[in-house]
Length: 293
Image 1 (cartoon, rainbow, N blue to C red):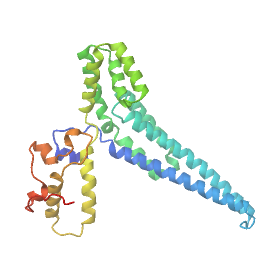
Image 2: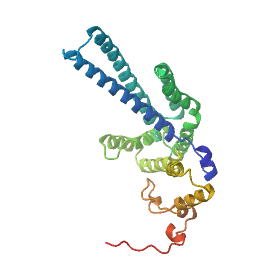
Image 3: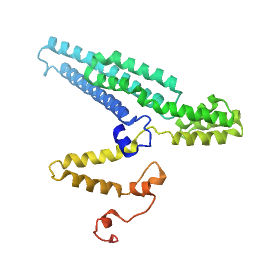
Image 4: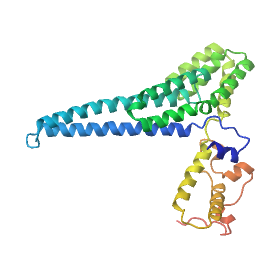
């Protein structure tokens, strides 16, 4: 993903492609949650069989099997809960854009890796893959935090306020504006900073928007192209097919986007800042006909 972004946008830094690692963590959590539910189902089924005299065959065998299922169920539920907590910390406190300073993130990151290593013996293949991925990519995943810290320090110097207040304004972005805690935090910062609050808060919001944290646009295109290429491996003339696919995606309008300026526009329009006709018209199929009721 980093190599692809470097090729497409050589001047745009990629500070922390957190999408894939978080997706990998969520997949592991969901897997162990399903294992825990499946073990519970087996235990309940066996207990119902144990309580029905018509289905019992060997009480000693059923008791031993049931005892083993109870141990497996307890272990699976504990491990699933622990993994869910660790991944939640990773997503909420460590890799979130609004968070603590880089040094604190690094300490929390190392703690999560150590806890995964402690539990790796229970599932070496899957937990080990996530643990090694985190351990090998720590500096790359947290690179955005260093950029954000520098921007927040510059805001503190420009507005002549305490860096702690600027950081608190950054953390305020984690709360929805409709929540009570958001307005309590906002009023607290407003009382401490006075008239400077509005300027500081706006500067922090702008700094967070300008901090590249994830190659979401690249992943969006990659997810679409992967399906197209997988389903059409049998086609000959691969270069021509890739050229047509590139043309379609470059001239297809975004139906929705978190960035308002992208909605209703194509990648070509965004990069060239010039409008163009529909991609079917550009292929020589004539102007689009109005929809008939």
